[in-house]
Structure formats: C-alpha cells, structure tokens
Length: 216
View 1 (cartoon, rainbow, N blue to C red):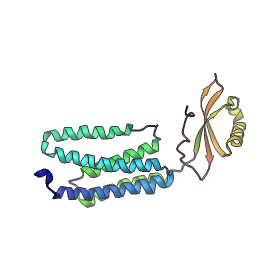
View 2: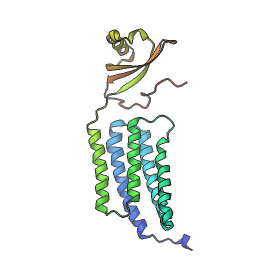
View 3: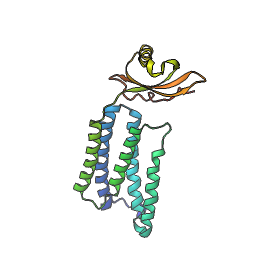
View 4: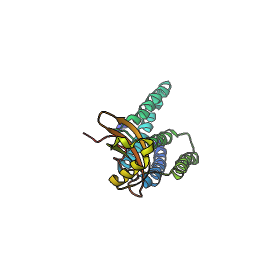
C-alpha cells in the first residue's frame, strides 16, 4: 500500500534542507535579536513554534494540492489568507514590536516553504537579507522603559505643575523619571492615565508595564 511506503521522496529531502535553513534563521532572529533585548520568554515560545508549524503547514498544503492544477492557486491563496489571519491570534493585546516580529517570522516560514524552485544560494541570500534588515532596525532602536500609571492627583497634570508631578511620581514609584505623558482623564473619579518614562537597566519589557488598568 502506498500509505505504508517507508521511502522518502526527493522533494521531501529538499524540504528538510529548507526547513533547517528556516529554523536556523528564525532562531537567530528570535534568540539573538528579539529575546536578547526583550527577555520575554512567552513570545520566544510562541514565535519559535508558530514559525515551525507554519512552515510544515504551507509545505504540505502545496504538496497535497500540486496535482490539482488550476485549483492550486486558489487553494494557496485561501491558505495564505488563513495563515496571515493568525496575526489576530492572541489572548491579550500584543505590543506592536512583538506583532511585527510575528509577521516577519510567519513570512520567513512561508517564503522558505514555497521556495521549491529557488537554488540553495538564493534561499540563503533571501533569509540573510531579512535577517540583516531586522538586525539593522534593532541596532538603531533604543528602548526607553515605561509604565502606564493610574494617577489620582489630577491637579498636578497641568503643564505648569509638571515638575511637581514628576517629583511626586518619583517619590511614589522609586524611579528616576525622564518624561511623562498624560492620557485620558476621568473627572468623575479624579483619575488619569499617565505614561511614565524612566531610567532603568532592568525590566525593559516587563509583561505588565503596558497594562492600561488594573485587572478586576
């Protein structure tokens, strides 16, 4: 029976080479560029597994549809639409930087899975270009740690009271504050949302820093 055939086709062997290239470049982007600066393990897990899953999903989708001729293009289009709709996959709001990394890694996996007609040199060069682009962006991006704070002294949010506001926040938070941005104001409860930028070598991307309000 064909199902019990234990041999490997030449196409499957080529796929494994593309898979190793995809995993290698994805790992560099995730581990050396993203995680080294962010230290967010939950996204490390998500990025790595999604990139691997997307690669095999795209490859086997093409492998199954390759004999369907005219229907292949339609199948690929629907499949890719479904794949990129995974960008909405999240339980909490995903920060823009993490969403960008997810998009890049999904795109990288799709490119490697579809690149059956490219030479090995062309495939490596394409991956290297994407890696270089991410590295250049990360190199020129300097993070300023920040927190969203629910603040109760709305009388200090006036521009002329900015120094008093910073002084009060530094005293209550124990941080060296560089800048503050005042957001929405609730006049009924005398509360406001303030984004506080501060100096710190630790917790540049604390997973709760960007919460707009305390969980109920």
